[in-house]
Length: 169
Ligand code: APR
Image (tube, rainbow, N blue to C red; front, side):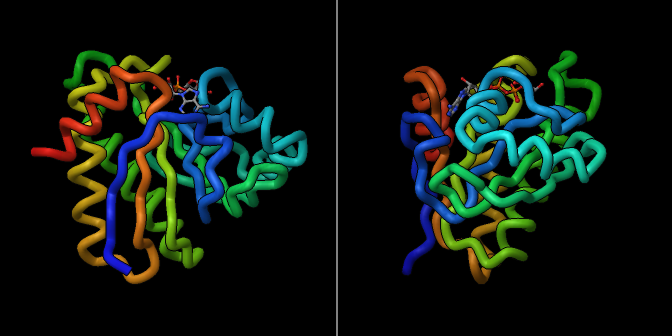
């Protein structure tokens, strides 16, 4: 099966893939946005599973079962909060994508769905984030054995357009 990156618009909690990625915060105790949607859909068992990690540093990733979600696993990664771009935010966003994909590979996931990490509450400019995401995913897929397909799941048309544009560069 050829490797691929796709951009779609939808609700990531509905994706029946091996792993969906959650744009979490460093407490891993849930929140709003996609984090809130994933916790609501996965159910209370997710909260209990996340407690065991005692948090997660920005740019790192942790994996749990998907519980009530159609996805087998959830990979939680706190992306960087945008503070102007001179505080290592780009490097930390690369790390969030990289570490999430490394965990997916380790757990023999073939299909992985990502939300647009850090571009909501964390205010990372979406055009820049999309370029970083697509570049990082492309480089990972060039060497991956298990991960074959990555889907960027945008929640709105503007975000979808930003990732489609990044895919064309
Ligand atoms: N499916 C896919 N994408 C979604 C969904 C969903 N169900 N809900 C929201 N999104 C999109 C947002 O529209 C945005 O484009 O996910 C992207 C990331 O936005 P946030 O969820 O705000 O995440 P982020 O910017 O990384 O901020 C993380 O927000 O929810 C809290 O606990 C979270 O503190 C953390 C912070």
